[in-house]
Image (cartoon, rainbow, N blue to C red; front, side, top):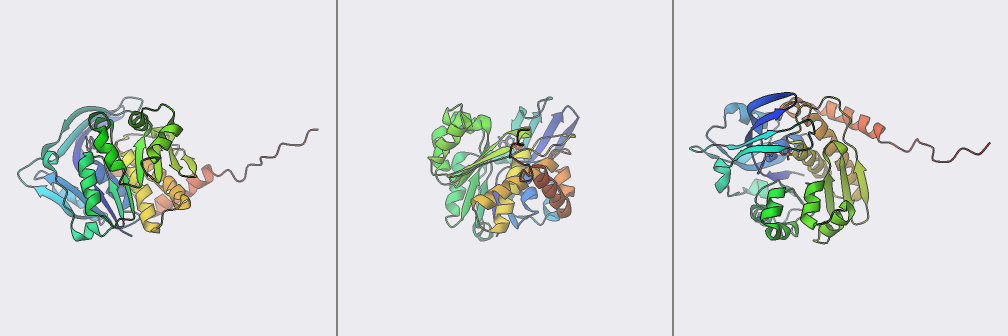
Length: 311
Ligand code: AMP
């Protein structure tokens, strides 16, 4: 089944302890759609300026992502974000945000994008997220992201949006801030009271946790020794998660758990190189191989739990 995503398409300037890039392709919808394109057909909805060149479009094209709903404002500039990470790469420090054409973004979905049964609302103004959700009343499964800025500045509008989706994928600090609840289990429970079926809490290099009505499932992050750039890891996780679910066409505790593993696998590739570079060059056999390694690594069934009999 196909999947639609709405969110930022951007140029990023990035600095990590391992290097620097001045202007590379980024944005939440970009990272998400690249990741999910390995699993299903993807429609990306966003806006770019006249400075978005053939090189950037080629990345979407290579992965057969439908870009019909990425509007081009020829006399405008693409959204720009500058971020820095120190040795604690779980925390991004925003140095500059230039909204540019994103400031007046008014997502209009074509019939093709609207007909998708799966929808991801990446981190944008909560009212816009709700407006897109309303354009797709027949979507079967809708997930969303958000960020601290919206939680601080418009919590009520954000909660109204949460009430019309099925799943939220946020980090632990955001979950605590949203619910004013330090205990993450209680925070997840409070979010579920808004009518959400699945809450996914991301914890950077420590993995991610899924809460459903009756279930609890945690996946570690894939243990990598070479992490270059965590930008977009959250969106790449969400892309693997939603892409897998859309490929299965059904959302159960079982498919949600497998989606968590695919999300972790995809995020692990994303951080190996700057920006979108690693996921862009990826092929499906590499994903399968890492999925198998991941399953083996987290497989507890072989461990004997019985206590050895006392001598
Ligand atoms: P992540 O690391 O998954 O949280 O997402 C990183 C991506 O989000 C970057 O590629 C940025 O271009 C994009 N981004 C940063 N700030 C914002 C914002 N305020 N609104 C939308 N997208 C953003």
